[in-house]
Length: 172
Image (tube, rainbow, N blue to C red):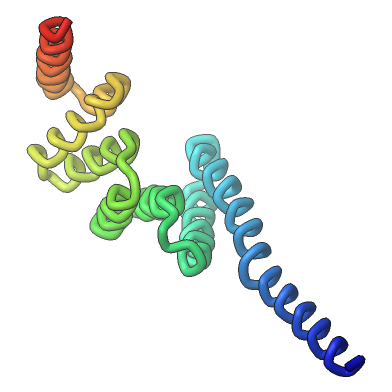
């Protein structure tokens, strides 16, 4: 009976060790990595050296890929991945990353990023549609585009808000 208890205890310890190394440690390290990558992306403008920014973006991509292997349903990782790809000028891949993030959650900053990329690629109408969608969430996002597109998007969003307000008042 004692050998059986020892075997069960050994199996429990082994199972716990596997869970710690395969579940908890990657989750903690990837959460720390997300914070580190987010801070570095926000700090790109403060780094004066283009080479340093590029190296940092490449390192961020590797870290994102490592974490996406563990957590393929994390929209924040796809957003950070897309942001770094965009910085490196890999617009098609960045667009794919942002679209993948959109399949996981609808966030205005993702639509805004897609809109900016589409405009950079010369696809003005797709860019306008994406920025309009972002502005439907929050008007702040019309600031990512210049005039006259900004005024056009503002008019569309204001018209929608007016229709919603009228509809809500009609139900009272």
